[in-house]
Amino acid sequence: LIDAVRTSAFDYLQKPYLPEELSFIINRLITGNGFKDNFRHSFQQFVKKDNQFAIQSITGLMFVRCEEVVLFQYLRDQRCWSMRQINNTTYKLRTNIGAKELLALSDSFVQINQQCIINSNYLFSIENKTLRCILCPPFSDIGEVVSSRYYKKIKDNLSIL
Image (spheres, rainbow, N blue to C red):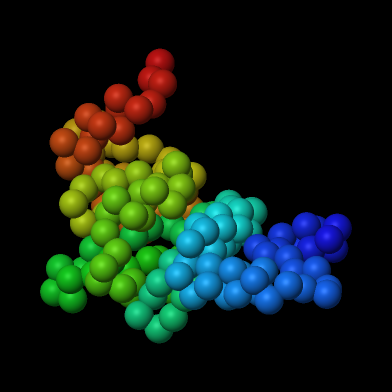
């Protein structure tokens, strides 16, 4: 029993087992009562280590650390978001992923306009007049502009001196 608890077992069946116990466990597994929630919770705990998350790209499930992501850009013509990583690789994400889901992945992700979510850890400044984002090197070539609507939200969420 102790080994089962240490390995985060969802069910434990002692030997010799009663047929009713086995039937109950199998039935619960088939109907999904409790199993999906327990699995989801355990998986989320696994993924939260090292500020990591799982995301579905068009090629498969990816496990990514937040600091590996520079920004997400919405590709209007393809109607999906893309994820740009610090090594300049870009991955197209599944079309069912929206801005709300991306923002929920980390507090570091901030939406700056309708088509762009940046990792605030790489944000150096926002110019006053142009509202152009200046990112830390080597990402200073990215010239995204904050919309006035999102700029107000960003300022409201920051402690500004």
